[in-house]
Amino acid sequence: MNAPESPKPRVAVVFGGRSSEHAISCVTAGAVMDAIDREKYDVVPIGIARDGRWVLEPDETARLRLQGDTLPEVDGDRTGVALLRQERHTELVVSEASQPHAPLGEIDVVFPVLHGPWGEDGTIQGMLEMAGVRYVGAGVLASAVSMDKAYMKVVLEGAGIPVMPGVVITARRWAREPEVCRAEIEALGYPLFVKPARGGSSIGISKVHDASELDAAIALAQAEDPKILVEVGAVGAREVECGVLESPDGEILTSQPAEIRIGGDHEWYDFEAKYLPAEHTELDIPAVLPDEVAAQMRELAARVFEAVSGEGLARVDFFVMPDHSLVVNELNTMPGFTPTSMYPQMWAAAGISYSELVDRLIQLALQRDTGLR
Image 1 (cartoon, rainbow, N blue to C red):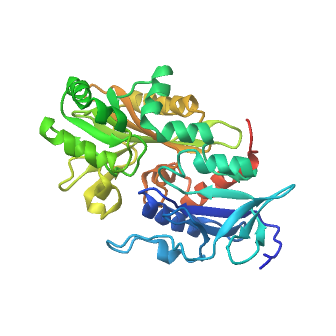
Image 2 (cartoon, helix red, strand yellow; image 1 turned 90 degrees about the horizontal axis):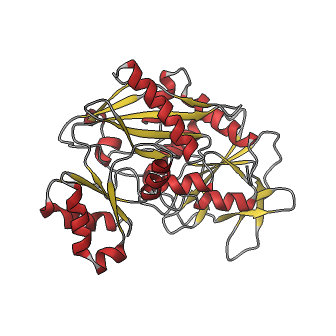
């Protein structure tokens, strides 16, 4: 099963994973694999099943697309694979209990299109660092801090960057002192948003209008993460995003801000509005903002990226308050990355096509060594 030698860099696209964003990761992977220039790179699709098993996926991207209400999924029964560190390189090997390891060839760079815990949170980044494999995107610290919205707030506040007021409720606190937790939450005032501290794609998030809705919202969020964040609702705010892209010489580039306008019955930007039929949302690229506000947002997005030691790419989500002041909502180190996702669309508006964006990120990863930097 030895793979033939190739002069082209070998890119392992890793997707799926154990988080509730498994299906969205699969969709992203299909789009990324379609965009990779096969004349320039060899591509190896690696799926992580919901139970954490790593498997060799076929290079067939059609099955990774959204099909109506059917979401794609990694097939955990396929051939198991693992990364094996050799003296001077790391290679991919078949890893099956019934047979010895069989080499599948060296891996030059990993493109981890994993969303959520056990992927976007520094876990796979740490594993790749230990294996000595270059990878696309943020390192261990930036990934972990950005995934945990509670710690993201601590870091950004320390850097003098405005964030929404909130309260962190752990499962232990909620079990031991629920009334103290409720009092802290009540002090924030309604409406509120209750969300998993380490989740994404708006899964497990609720808008809470009054105290009668609070317990159900906490239960929903805790089903995704025992640690939750309760935040003040940004009443009257607009949701505007800004893309960040590192240049080959280390310059931090920012896109024109883009705005999400939600239609239909969606009171806020929930999962359906993000990923299901397009009539639910409209995107304004660039967002209609005063020039000075747009410039301030781009400057602030770069500061956020630097504050968490970001690398490669990020999307910074803002609330534009009624008085045009800016508040950072969250930071995504592996933002939605299908061609119709906001991040690629912002760069397309700047003249960087989807395939060029994918290529830039792979090249950045190939130029960057693992280890302390």
